[in-house]
Length: 395
Image (cartoon, one colour):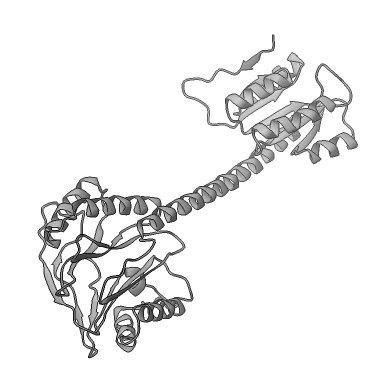
């Protein structure tokens, strides 16, 4: 029966490299074990190809030092060469040094072609062997670090894609339109996903919700938190629910589900369609710009603090009367805080000026002008998600 002989670790385990030695001759195994142990290596031994694979599948090693010849053939090294592909399938980054008493240039070259790091002939020189092993261990550590970094990049890429899918699912696939209004929304995702969210939906025949929010943070955690916020907002929405009351309810929910140093900004508006009166609460969000037909601008700031920080926070209700020709622009900080190569911000003044200059067109016109200008300003490199919601009031 094939056996795997392990060097038993002391309770205060050595910090040296974990090395697997494989040879079918017990005296060679023992000589190598004593040599490497003397120089601080953690050593395990294996006496057959099957025992090598069993050890590699059971734990990770910093190095494999193995003979090329076992029971089937004692001269060609073919059995060891055939084993190399199976070893690489178990641990592609494992450094391998081979030994054989029947070495030749051709065998060495073939072993190198199959991924071997170096080649040692028996009988070996202790000093040269240790030099080779230390060099291969160092190279293996570099390979593993590179492999770990690449794996982390792949994982991050998967998380970003998943977060983007979650975020896209939060945004309306089609923005509903209502008599006397034209509504246009746009989301410009950053390289690293943030937590922007906007929504437009009717809560009755005469009332429409207009909301926009932003989670502090990026990636999957921000996207998942925004998903929870959307559920909380829609779950708390009722025709008779004032924006201030809704923000108090949502804030209590967020405070009990959010981690430290995290918060959410939210602007929640309830528009009465017959009167065009907008009741709103601004929970620490960028104040939307209500640009009048004459070019004047009103900022919608009334409300309270951000969500998720103060459990007992109170929120006020603001009121704005929409009139024909008005343009209401709601946005996230990814638009106004977008920076150029000189670290200058796009800023709210530019945004408001563009709305004023393009207030007579469709809802999509100021939206496109703003996003195009911000993209040109940043060189197309948005550091954060940029989200816009534009409501054009008809005559």
